[in-house]
Amino acid sequence: MKYKKKLTLALTLILFSIAGNTVSAADLSRSEVIQLLKDASKASPANLRRKDLKGVDLSQLDFRNADLWGADLRGANLSKSNLSGLVLDLTVMVGVNLSGANLSKVSIFGVSMMRSDLSNVNFSDSRVIANLDHSNMSNANLSNVRWGADMKNQPMGLMRVSLNKVNLTNANMQNADLGRATMRFANLTGANLNNAILLSAELAAANFTDANVSHVDFSAAKMAESNFSNANLSGANFLKAQGLDSARGLNDNKTKSAAMFD
Image (cartoon, rainbow, N blue to C red; front, side):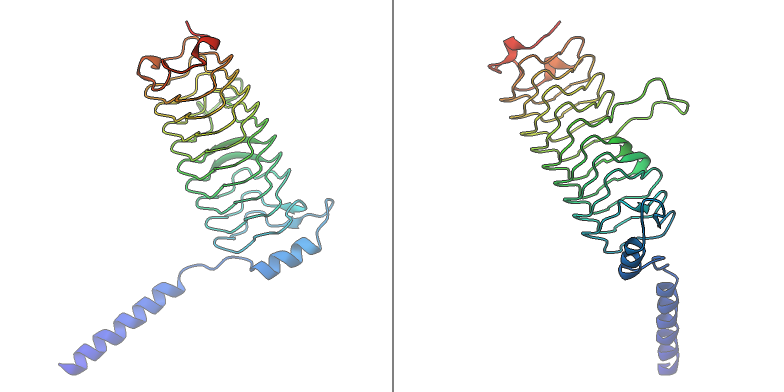
């Protein structure tokens, strides 16, 4: 009996060992990526195209001379790295850490970035159509972004940015185009959305407490249970917005008279 127990235990350990060894390692280590970046130039970028970089520490690196198209960056640490101007279409970035990274002027299309750390990230002047649900974007710079749905180019149905349950507290969203974005339960407390476009956006239960929404285009947006407590509504356009009868903090807002309603 003791022999059988020992044999069973040994077989179990072997099976666990085999299972552990089947987990694929990343294609490149941090040191190998650093060497590729060191040897790269604009004319000859570092080839990271479609590379498996899951979980690799890539923090504080300069990727401006790299090709990351289609790379698998799930769980990778890219905090404080510079990816400005890159085309990151079809990359895989679920659970990625990009806190404090420079993503200005990037293109990100057809990507899932759910549950990612995007706090303090610089997304200014970028073009993004991706799923960022449940991500942390507190203090992010989204000024002048072009994240609105392109209604002239929708061959596969409506393609739009998704920001459901995203933390956007204190984010800079001035002049941001988020037309037709879906932002249900998004937290925009203290955010600056001056002159932003939220035309036809899905904003159910979004929280705009203490936010600056002056001159924001909310026309035709869906806004049931949204919260505008102490928000600056001066010049905001709520024409044809839906669900305003259930919006909180709107009727007693001191700047309501400076906004446009039907």
